[in-house]
Image (tube, rainbow over all chains, first blue to last red; front, side, top):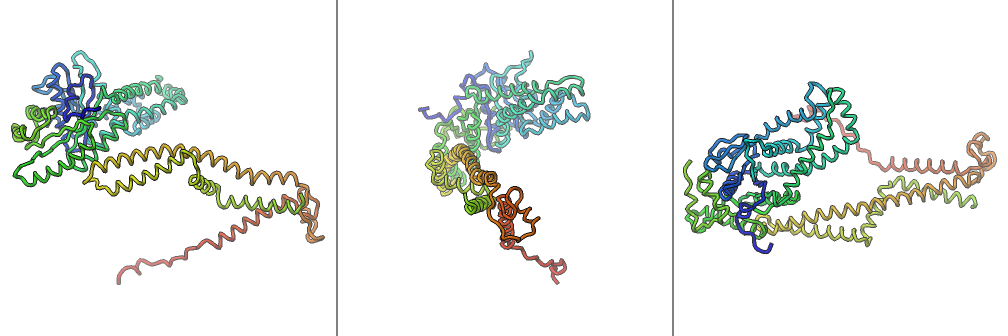
Length: 344
Length: 198
C-alpha cells in the first residue's frame, strides 16, 4: 500500500463483500458506542442492505445505547429499518447447548455412564462453550425461514479483550482437537457405537456427528480468515495500558490470520486552546500517545473520535456522533457537537 | 595375549564402565553436546547463536526504553523481540533434532566401547587362567568355586575377576559416598511453651 491509509472507516462502509465485522478492545473504551456507530453508518450509507448488530458481551448495553429494549431475537431499530440488534446471553445459550448436546449424543438416559462421559469429554474441551454458542448464533442467523430476514453484514460487539480472543481462537483449536477425536473414533468408534447402540436401542454414529461439527467449524474458520469477508475494528483510548492491550490484541489477531486494519481512538479531548488547565494537560498526554500511534500504525486506518460532554445514547445522538467515523473530526469546525447532544 | 595384558585391559574397561555409570550417561551426553554447541561450525547452530545474541540485545534495549515515554520505539522492540523468540524456537527445535541424533550415536559408541569388548574377552579367554594362587592357599572346594566354570583349579579366570572388580568398585563408591555426604545434625525439639513469652 503506497497511499497512507485515510483516518476514517470509509473503506469498511463502502466495502461490498464484508460479512462479519468484529468490534473489540479493552473494557470501558467505548466498544458498544463504536459498534453502534459503525452499524448506523453502514445502514445509512447502504439503505438497500440489511445489517445485524449482535452483542456477545454478558453485560449488555445495546439496549442502553439505543434507548430501546433488545432481546435474544433480532429486533429492528426504531427509525432505521435496515438495522436490527440482538443481545445474546452467553449463559442461556450454554443451557441450550447442553440440551442440544444431549440430543446430539443421545438423550440423557438418567444414569447412563457412557453418555455422561460423552458430555464430560465434550464439556472439558477448553473454549467449547464459546464455540457452540457461536455456532448457535451462526445457525440462528443462517437459517432462512420464510418470515426471517437475511442479513448482508453482521457486526459483533464483543466482550472485553480476553474473552474476545478466546472466542476467536476457537475455530483453530477446535479444528485441531476434532482432528484428534476423529483419529480416535476411527479406531474406537465401532466399539463405542456398539456400546451406545446396545444400551440406547439405537445406533448413534458418533464419528459422523463430530465430522459434521468439524465441517461447520472449518467453514467459519475459513470465513474469518478471509479479509474480503471479515474484518476487526479495534477500539482504544489514548492511554498507555489501552494502547498496550490493543497492540497485543492486534498481534494475537494477526496470529489467527484475521484482517485488522482499523483502530478507533476514542475519547480524545481536542482542547487545544481551552481555558481548562486539566483538559489541556490531559490533551497533551493524549497527543503524546497519538503521535506514537501514528508512527506505529502508519498503514492502519486510525480514526480519532472526540470525547463528548454526555453519554452518547439514542439513535439521533449516535447518528451525530457516528458521522465522524466517516468524515474525520475537526475540532475547529465540528467543536459544537460536544455540547450538541439531546438530553435523554 | 598374555594373562597380564588381559588382566590389565579388563581392569581398565571395567573401571571405564563404572566411571560412565557413576557420572551418568546423560551428564556425559550433555557435556559433549555443550562442547559441540560451542565449537561446531554447523549453520543451524551458528544461526541459533546469532539469534540468541540478537534477542538478548533487543531485550536489553527494550528494558532501557520507557514504554510510556517512547511507546512506538518500545512496541517496535517488543515486536522484534517476540519475532526473534519464535525464530529461536523454530531453530532450536531443528537443532534439538541434531542433538537427539548425536546422543543416539554417542550412546551407541559408549556401550560398544565398554560392553562389547567385555563379552568378547569373556568368550575368547574363558579357559585362560589369569593367575594362580600359591599352592594350598584355600581349601580345594573354595578353589573349585573360584575357578568356576572353565579355568584350571587353583587359578582365577575372567568371570571371577570381573565379578571381583565390579564388587570392589561399587564398595569403594559406597564408602566414598557414605563419608562424603554431609548429614544434617538433628535439631533439638522446641516445646511450644518455651516459645511463648513469659
